[in-house]
Image (cartoon, rainbow, N blue to C red; front, side, top):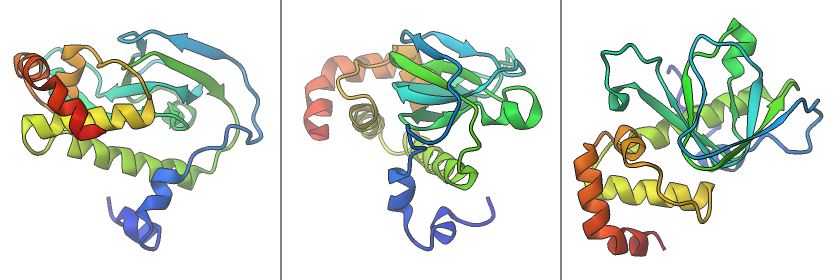
Length: 190
């Protein structure tokens, strides 16, 4: 990535997590869309607007090549205040497949956002994604629960196959751990 997030922010990683594209920033609202959990929002190589996530969590995946598993295609999670689909404005099409991980509300965004803030937040989300794929299976699920609680308070667990794709675990492992350790996972996140 060249420069680290820390170098770009002069040592203030916390400001990336706190930075959000303001809801009241000058913009022209075209549409507000509501999506249920598990719905595919768009596919890579399709065109559309940039979206601001008002509520919920969206998972981004590399395009489906019918060879690579969803776990190998997982790119990152985006949530409240994040802009997604910015690349479609730059290159004409979306680079990633997008799936609503929880109930999600998106607003189309046509302003010229603070692009540096967007890309610094993007780097922070990529780091979160890497952490969701490291450590023990239980630690991965605990990190995901904490992220869910922070980004979409009260949201239920995503579908098992989505959890498996995001954490790099097998669906069976996720199912077994959630059945056996649900209380411990939730308690450790409180």
